[in-house]
Image 1 (tube, rainbow, N blue to C red):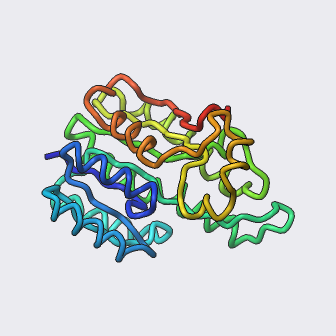
Image 2: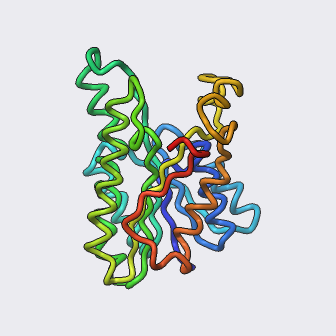
Image 3: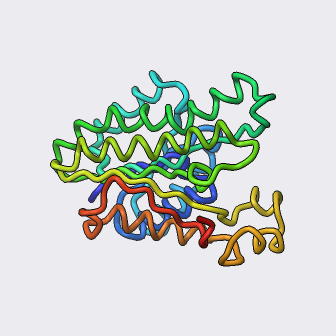
Length: 239
């Protein structure tokens, strides 16, 4: 059974990704930090439903701690699918953005990619099969007011997978980014109503987490072995 690590795997989007990969027969490792209890509950739910799952807690901004957690994972078996979904927001106009607001967002989204993927990469390459998928954002492509830090971090992920793909393609490992647009979640529902979403999105609705999860599930499959180094938008036509 292939093993899949999903960072931020208990968030609204992360949980949809986790459930979809579990349904495809993967053993899912549900990473969380602040949401550790949600990750444990999701693992219990999936296990009760007959799937294979476990929870993992660590702070991706703490690279030594994350490295240690990855070594413990490797002792159980190599994760051949890594979905880096974890991220955070600290929105502010750039002129008033504090150093902490800038760095905290980069530490989780971009630094977290390094902290998780780098220690797993050589063991994954040794299996000669792997899928690395980074969850970016429409903000990385179109930009958004008040999100210079978030846009920088998510754009960095696109650059990272494009370069990494060239390093690992010959060993059967792919590296891609998925860039969702407005995806339904409690946070989105608080920030904007359906009328505003219809004004922004040509498809006139928010995306469903399951639609993003289906795309990621495909990229994690054998069928996607010739797709690598790509940033795939899923945003209802926003651009």
